[in-house]
Amino acid sequence: MSGAGVKRDIVKEAIGFFFWTGWLKPAPGTWGSLAALPFVWVLHVVGGPGLLAAAIVAAYVVGLWAIRGLLETSESEDPSEIVIDEVVGMWIAMLPVSLGAWWADAGLLALYPGWIAAFLAFRLFDIWKPWLVGKADRRGDALGVMLDDVWAGVFAGLVTLVLAAASHLFLLA
Image 1: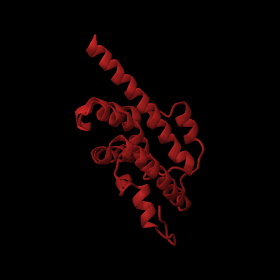
Image 2 (image 1 turned 60 degrees about the horizontal axis):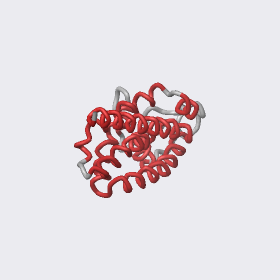
Image 3 (image 1 turned 120 degrees about the horizontal axis):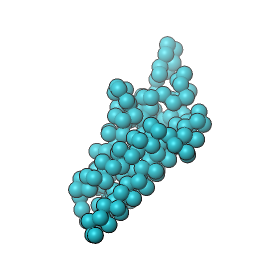
């Protein structure tokens, strides 16, 4: 991302590459999504779903700023090493799990089927790019880089809610 004569911005790189997890290969988006999970746990333990929701908004705003700056020095419309968008999407996908743990007064890790479902559903939607995910991805700008993962996170969160409801209905039957 930084060719000869291009000044690097270490702050934008730290944010956009999410502490450089975006440089991990193969599948940097998967690595970024995995790196997001411990932060979800910390945010949930410290402040529950409210803090996670606030962190999502903050990461979206700061991440969009970093993406815009990183794209200025990139030849790609969506460089694979930018993974702050995956972090935001993964956090959105995990919000229903955090809410469920808070509501049930349970530890977030106790709801492991939920966070596994959220992770797998998020990766599926992020790779598959159906409907609004693909539409956002085709924008070809910083907002599109971020929005496709926001939509993937929303859809993954909804799938996680449906799976949780189905499992609880099955357990009660």
